[in-house]
Amino acid sequence: MDKNYKNLVFTNHAFDRIKGRTITKDAVYQTIKNSSKKFKQGQSTKFIKTVNGRKIHAVANYLKNENKWLVISVWVRGEDDKAPIIWTLITLPFKLTYKILIWVLKRLTNFKK
Figure 1: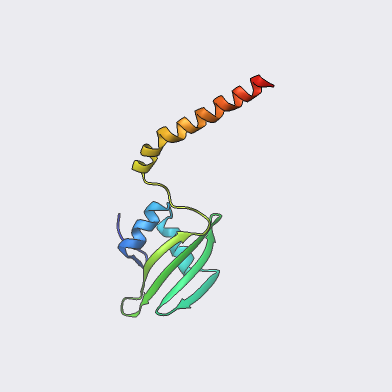
Figure 2: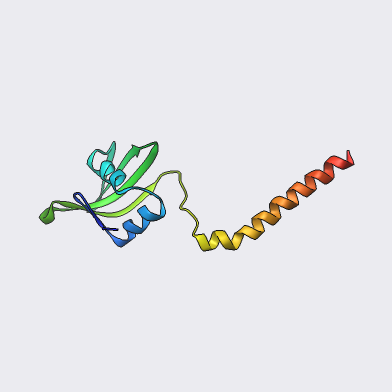
């Protein structure tokens, strides 16, 4: 996947964040181009916009010479990152055991009444 989109350039960190958080490059572009809130933070600017029901936050630096935004980080407020697939596979047996145990305990307590 290309790390450039329209007048945006994504750092490795930002690129990893949009992939891991399932945010489209176009949603980041909309957030920066037409933000509902904008805050200057040193050399960077933080942009906030709700796109498709998700409150997207993006931090970027403007590159005057190139007339582009260098996107440093991106996230969605109120959403956790997806767990890596390996972690999901490792914890799956424990989650299933817990659910089965709860089901058995509920059955046992219903029979005693």
